[in-house]
Image (tube, rainbow, N blue to C red):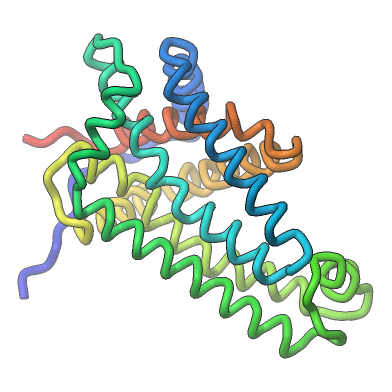
Length: 251
């Protein structure tokens, strides 16, 4: 069987991270309505999830994990906005609706893969914690008390390492994959392989980029989710510019 070759990528330096963030913020300022609408929708959805599952730790973990894994798919419309701005156009909500009406099956397939990955992490996490925690874990307060703040156990530390080991390949598979699918007529597999190639070409830069994404997302959540109104579109626009910087144009 013929191997799937990645698109050509370039090595990028750490300094490019600031450029991506600056360009992402500039796009949000130039065309704020689509981005803020996406951010508000994520905030409202997150608040609904929190209200629904706040007293059930595993349900809460599952819903938010699924939300975080599928969020790059939701931000696809904002990649399109950045693309239009690059070409000197003035995009609006109509351009985003036109993108979703196209019903690109590749985005659907990729979203399903991400949803399965999120479910796999929650099941793995639940199995590990319930097997090794000293007490049954049902509510968030019990996770904090018997796992996160337990002063004699090792469960929380191993749980964090396990999460990092599972999150790293997910990040490597998605960092530029969705912009690739939006911008080019390639298969889902080739988009994922290209994303891995980008990470392998600049591992330190990509690791720092992952830390920035997680850090800003955490800040957005810790502000009663209100910070997500700005963080979500900012990171989405910045991710588009990361893709444009990393993946070389076709010959």
